Image (cartoon, rainbow, N blue to C red; front, side, top):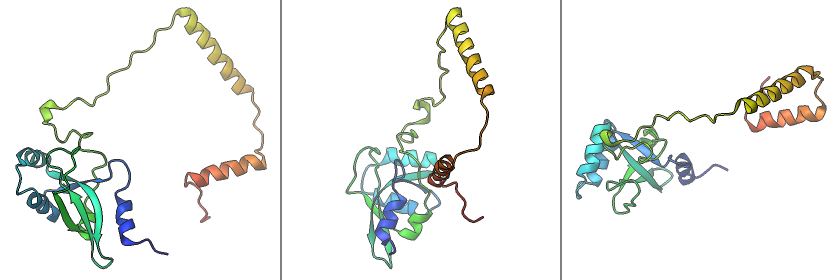
Length: 180
């Protein structure tokens, strides 16, 4: 049984951040974004999308028919966290399919913030807990004893059960190749 076109479209936008789509300024859908917000004051959103070189829209739902599938996207010009049910654009699924996913939310990427006001994403070095000399030497001794135990272990042939568990693990991870 083949999956219906609406489910296929919905599956494309499943997952955290995958409902957000990049609309490059050279895409035919970019003008549709601007047309959708032409009747409102969207100066701030327009300045952000012009600065970034692309617009971001949120997938709403599939529409149309099997022969002519369509996608509906919300243009959230007042902020990505605010629903905009009255500002929805409709584009052909062929065009929507070519638009790259944003990969996260506009808030996470700080797209709605001027670059000078963005928070740094560079991780600060974490402070290491200081051990006393006594504690440090105890840890060193424990590590050395574990290393010695590992060195003394004799390798044996795996059991049938262990091989079965390994095969199941590889299959679950998609790493098992049956073509050989």
